[in-house]
Length: 341
Image (cartoon, rainbow, N blue to C red; front, top):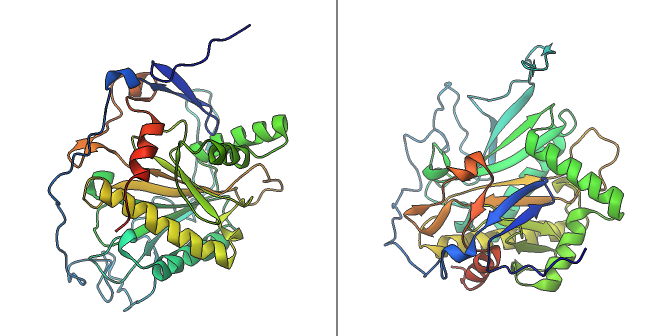
């Protein structure tokens, strides 16, 4: 059956091969969705050290523990962990009321001793130290847990309860829902095409160029073809790497460089510290075969047209499927045009 060529200026749906889900794109709803609007900078000048901050060096945390006077990235077990390592194994087998116990651990990583900085404010050498900590923590936790999730929630809009620059690392024996979808989709693609899904996807995107935001010798940042969020990105290595623990010295430095660059572009977009959730997905641990995986990071920023206009997943999107008005190609062009600080 012959199928007509798709007009991307008309309503259409895009398929996310990583999750097996669809997205509705409605570009006709607005001819020019982003007009370069900027709010007056709402940056709040914060001190390098905040006596009441439970993440600053030397301060006491909620459980009475005292932070050391750290200068490099500092990691500790979350005082209010969502997962606990000693939860007794248990399961309820019922088709309607099925449950199982969860075991794991949650850690906090302070990116810097300075309270007034964010990740894009740090020099490349400091970001590289954070990458090295991500690698070391993942290697350690991966010996015991199937899944290690590195992530950062930046900004109160994304639920961050403390402005001190920090991220989190959660590890669990179970494979969470989203990584499980990605694992299955990548495995199916590998079986069908004999090549890793994201390896082939990156090759195609580098040829097209329209959704490429920035690249260097070892990494590329794209607005994915299937992006749900307005300025969502995916960060991919150019070498077939399955886990963050596989990075070599050059890839560590160039990762720090491209992270600084893309996050500074975010901050320039609306002239504010740009809120986002960002995290890494790599091959699960304690498994034999993982060649179908390619390490990658997702960033999901909620802002739409200005610092005051947020994208909400409501209505049709909660009850049907995600929807966006302006295309990933337009978002990539906007991000490309921004300079770093």
